[in-house]
Length: 170
Image (cartoon, rainbow, N blue to C red; front, top):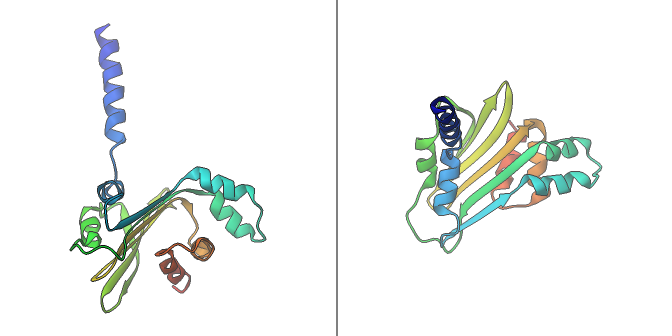
């Protein structure tokens, strides 16, 4: 009986350890719903609804079918604080897990595209933008094809996603 209780406790504890939030989740939870921030969470159910609607672009249909979630966190125009979650998220990301895909440096803003791969497939694409006036974090999760990802930005018309079009030019 003791072995059975130990075994059950072990599985419950190991499940709790695996369910820990990622740095992206932690940042999203920290600022989501706070004044001066806009957050958007698009679920897999929403993508399944898109997948049911046929488009004229089979590549786009395939992209939508493979997405699990999109999280967007951005400072809005009413934000007057001095928070730079670009640095905050970069410092917390496990360097061995995320690979730099592209970096854009402009006068007052830095944008980084990072990917998380598993078994040779991209399972998460991060766009992290930080600067004097604006911070944005976009996490796209699923089985991601970079060749088609810019189509997502054009079709959804969500602030911040326009930076995804720059991947197409790489």
